[in-house]
Image (cartoon, rainbow, N blue to C red; front, side, top):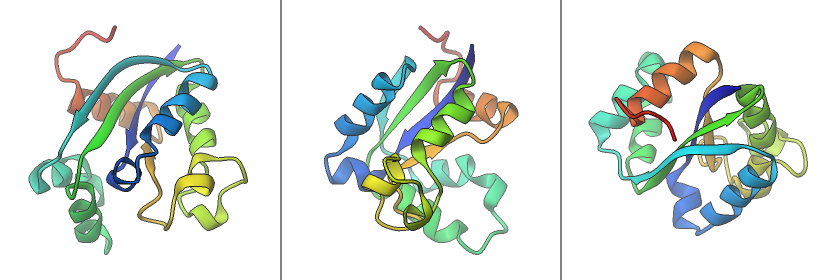
Length: 137
């Protein structure tokens, strides 16, 4: 079993499609090991996305991620990272496969409804960022 972090981003929460995303997660066979609704401060968003600090989109990304509540989840499944990334689809909803979350519910490359860890080391950092010191259920 592998654990990954998933975020239902502020755009999806604001449009009231978080329930649809949660349903897709469960139907895909993931175990939800932890879940929180949080409103990130700008500083928390900057800390989470620190790896992208030098990128031109860093400012707009961290502003966006702190504009409203997000749902953070620790998901577990065999190959959870790859499985979640496949369910999300490509970062740009216009390039995502039909039937993926981002294709169906994302509106732009930044407002693409979801985030997911891209590697085991990233997942370990990201899960720990949102669920520090918590033994996952």
